[in-house]
Length: 130
Image (cartoon, rainbow, N blue to C red):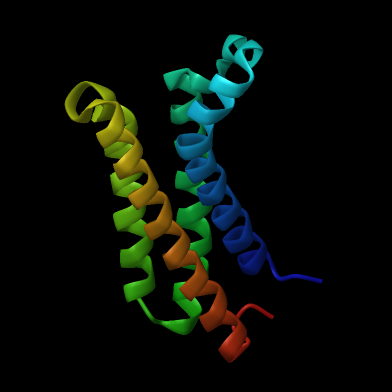
């Protein structure tokens, strides 16, 4: 059975990947399948909902792991990534434009995934999540 901390790290990595795929693949998919344009996937609310899933999942997983392995630089990766995602979701399109918003969203998602990847590996190395 997978320990809860590892499951949360895996979920957060998956959410980060979903975020990247949403930003990079959605324009291509909408061009190739115009009927998908009626779905709320391109809506800014979808982006906010996705970020609102990432914030608690990432926070809980990173703090649970770091509380045990004591490598707090891992939390810094995650907090930086989540901060970039939050700021981009709130101010992105108006301040950065469409390309800037996509760029910073991908950067934030990659930073979050790096933090969770490190957290997952450190927990597995020292068996702190068992």
